[in-house]
Amino acid sequence: MSAAPVITVDGPSGAGKGTVSHLLAAELGWHFLDSGALYRVTGQACLIEGVSWEDEARVAEIARGLDVSFSAAENGEVLVAYKGKDVSAAIRTEEGGRGASTVAAIPAVRRALLARQRDFRRLPGLVADGRDMGTVVFPDAPLKFFLTASAAERAERRYKQLILKGESVSLPRLLEDIKERDARDSSRAVAPLVPAEDAVVIDSTGADIEQVFAQVMKEVTLKGII
Ligand SMILES: Nc1ncnc2c1ncn2[C@@H]1O[C@H](COP(=O)(O)OP(=O)(O)O)[C@@H](O)[C@H]1O
Ligand SMILES: Nc1ccn([C@@H]2O[C@H](COP(=O)(O)OP(=O)(O)O)[C@@H](O)[C@H]2O)c(=O)n1
Image (cartoon, rainbow, N blue to C red; front, side):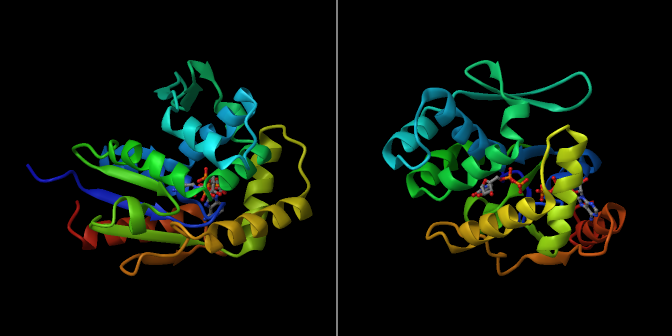
């Protein structure tokens, strides 16, 4: 039997990857991989276990043995647990994002999480959201997207999202954070954030979710996936 098909959705923070990937997985009835959540849980596990994000050997050890589980809440939201304890809210904070991008720069951490990500590939198909889904984890995916938008617009989207969750955040600080994270993700030696050569690049600056999703569905149809 041939491997299940994969559609990859990569791009920087706040580009709309999670939103578009969820919509696409629901539309196709496919599985969904939130690879960022694995890096976020690794960062969170370090905080819980008292391991510094900079201690590469110990962080890699945590990633190798990561006791993480995903389940669906009654309201349809995805619950993420570490050692059986709900960490869904903690991993989505600004600090959670910083931790994730710090531990994600450690090559041994990326190696440790590779097989775990590939295990999500199951029939009828997988939508995979991340930074290196199309370049490293699923290079043979038949359809790859790279979503992007200006840093200012992505910071504003993130600002609204965190304010709605009741976090007190400042827009200038978020913009700095996004630029810092872009630089760290793009310049790291292993699996840097770059579009795959065969990716469809969509810049959503000034476009709303419906417009972006329509563009994505057009490509899905062109590829004959539906
Ligand atoms: N094209 C868009 N226009 C406006 N807001 C968007 C768009 N795409 C996503 N958003 C909003 O921006 C925020 C970040 O989107 P998200 O999908 O979490 O991005 P990513 O997964 O790339 O970090 C969410 O609140 C989402 O509703
Ligand atoms: N495939 C992936 C996914 C996330 N990451 C890292 O994990 C961090 C958090 O990822 P995310 O997708 O949850 O974050 P957002 O794009 O939603 O801000 C990113 O800043 C990346 O540094 C990665 O390196 N590779």
